Image (cartoon, rainbow, N blue to C red; front, side, top):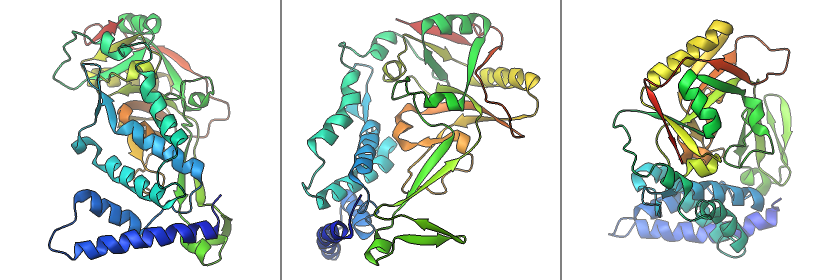
Length: 340
């Protein structure tokens, strides 16, 4: 937790930096882009009262999104045009750490952020690079399913696939890149101004929300549903993330989605299908970025560029959902298997 005294100490540092940038903005030279981002945070330091562990997790999430593995197997920064939002938030993180005790992210936080990146290279060339070596990807839109060859081969040949319920993804046995609470979305509302005024809670719609020495934590919880996850591109990180040794490249995503949705609705006509790109939201800044929670995820997973097909029940389900097995017919005329 963060005390009021800590907030005041940090705010003194932040105010000095803000005043300097505001002075500089009045000079003939314009502020550089990163200085504009710095000022935006210094004017509203939304993380100033956030606990260290949550700030560290946020740092790790952003770090995962600004680095990529190229087809040559080398680590490289993601082009700025693709990561402008995350570079802004990364700049905010630097300013926040600059106001804390050491003035920079602690060594263990940096080590934790780098650890998933090093994992791609722990056996030499990343498996994703080896898998797609020499493969010429279609120039038209595709979607890719990563997994084990023993499951993907029958999926390609006969269309046999497993449709998981969202609650299953919260299994502690899954890899970090796969495990997520897919039936809740959590938001955080900064309270440093209220704490400086001596408040420890606020009234919201007639109910007292106590926050003490923390920000407000608002979980959005919703019913279980079914989903099928794919990626919108070939990504050399994904095989490592998913423990995969194969991938199905689907050259006609429209046909695949139509067949999966129609097969599901033939068995469960009262369910609502959804499909498309996942919306990635920042839990501290994007309070209204999405309207369909089943099609949204924390921005720490944004580098995966997920495309999903999901099904929501129209009516309340009285029993626990279990994975479904279904067949959508052979995919060999519009997809191909790539494997080690």
